[in-house]
Every structure is written in structure tokens, then in C-alpha cells.
Length: 293
Image 1: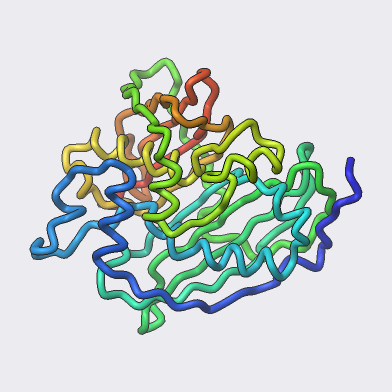
Image 2 (image 1 turned 90 degrees about the horizontal axis):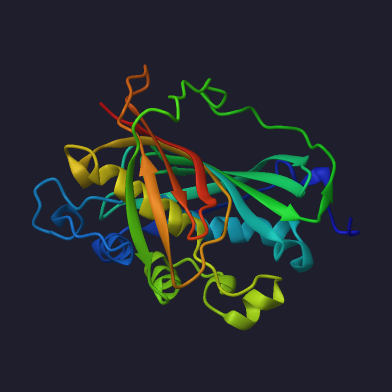
């Protein structure tokens, strides 16, 4: 194990609030980066307003992740971070014209076999202080040591027992090509800049074989496909998303998105899904959408 370490005192460190103006251009660009074609993502005459992709909150949350890293992580630790888990609650969809405010807090820190596992909680509210989205963004810092830090109070429902279906039940499956330029397009449209996704020299310097697709891009593509399987398509309201990340997605390549039909649950119908990298290993696993009524 290296001498790199994250101190337990990182837990509770806060960044923000940062304000973000959400406009139609940003919402449309994010959808376009994912290859969306549903008119709801692009029709600015739509009476209900533009649809926001369920994973759009990652766009306005990213600057807060960088702010916290700058406060608690040395550069030689920060470059070892990989996105490991994602848990999003959508209290309501972001809308064009919103002015949102996001605060980020280190919620927990614990040692795992590959390294230090740090969970960042990002809470976003509108100008009236009403919640819009809450995300728990888990990162593994490979080869980095830490001690168990104190844990902030868990979010409600965080320990919901899985009611998983048998893998023997029917799964739909869709093959999705990943263009060699997708990481560059996603970076600019999402406004998420991390050079390991667009700069080969930086990626190789961080120990990667080449640039790789953002984990959030892979997850967003899988969510899009899961929504296309629903009767309302892109307009299907989403209450929550949970997922774990695994294999890297190279560029160019292909992924296979697989999922099951919704099953009833008290919080809303649940859709299980996953995304497999070109070599068959899971890039997104243990993933679920909770659909709002």
C-alpha cells in the first residue's frame, strides 16, 4: 500500500453553496450528447417545458465535487479517484429558468480493499429553498489509505432492502455503439471537465490504457434506454437512480444495456438495469430506476 492517505477529518468538510442558472441550451446540449431524439428534450414550445434528462444533475454538481477535492485531497490522491457508486434522488426535475444552489459535504470515509471509499453528498435547492436533487456520489481512491471517519446521518431509505428479481426472469437487451468522440462531446455538453476522458497523455499518466468514457455518460445512456422501454418513453417521471460502476468503457466500442420490466414497490415502480462493456464485464451494475407514479 502506498503512503497516500485521506484523514478522517475530511468527513464533514463542506463546499458551496454554488449557484447555477439552468437554461434550455444546457438541457438540450446534455440530451443531444446522449443521442436523444425525443422531441420533449428539444421542443422549446412544449407547454410543460423542456424535459431534463434524469441524470442532468451531474452537470451542476460537478463543480462542487472539484471544490471539495481541492479542500481535502492532495493532487496525488485526487488523480487516483474513480467513480464507484451513484445514488440520486430527484425531488423534482430541473427546469429551464431555474436558479439552483448546490452544497456538497463529505458524508463518509472508510477503507475498502482497493483503497479509500469517500461519499460526497450534494444537495440542491431552488430560490425558495425547496429541494430539487440530492446525490450521494461515491469514489474509490485506489491505493490510498484511510481510517473510518464519522458518518453523517444517512439519507432516508438509504438502506432499503433490495427486492431483486431473479436473473432468470426476462431481460430486454439493446446494443449501443460508442463513438470515438463521445467523451469529448459529453465533456463539452455536460460541462464536466476531467482530462482522463479527453486527453490521452493525461489518461495514460493516470495509469489508464487510454481515454475512457465518463461513468455518468455510461449510466445516462443506460437510463435513456431503460426509459425507452417504458410506455411514456423519455417523459416517464423518475424519482430516484442508484448504480454501481465497474469495467471501463473504451472509445470507440459498444455497450449492451439490459433491463427488466418494472415491478411494483411502495416508493414507485422499480426498473432493474445494467450496462455491459464490450468485453462483457459490467460497466454499470446493481442499477435501479424508481419511477414516480
